[in-house]
Length: 122
Ligand SMILES: [Zn+2]
Image 1 (cartoon, rainbow, N blue to C red):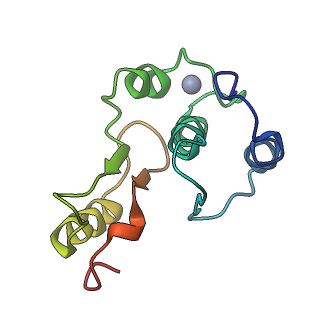
Image 2: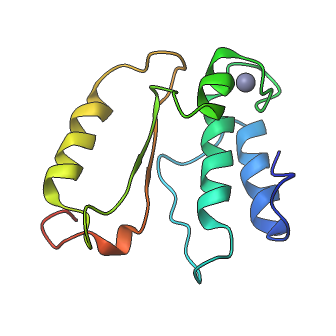
Image 3: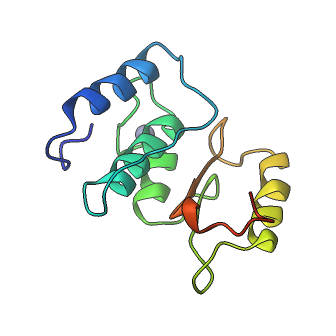
C-alpha cells in the first residue's frame, strides 16, 4: 500500500490503520501545496476502501483490477469543468451516491481541486 508514494508517512500510516480497523470517515480533505501527492494518496486510499479482499490492496480482485484500468463503476473522480466545479457536476454525484455500489460494498468519489467549486456547488 502506498509503495509508489514517497514521504507523507504519518498520513499514509493513519489511512492504512483506519482501513485495518475499519474505522474511516465518510469524507476526507487532502490539503497542501500542488505536487505533494494528494491525489495519488486519495486514489490509493480509494482503491483500498473498494478492495474486496481482507488485505485491502490485493490488486487481484475484480474491484482492484477494474480500478487499475480506470473502469471501476464504484469510483469516480470529479474534475473542474473549465475553471470551476459546477453545481450540475455536484448534483450528478449526489444522484450517484444514492445508487447502490456495483462491485464493492462502497462507493468512492474524489473531487479534485474542490476549492474550485462554485459557491452554488458547495
Ligand atoms: Zn483488491
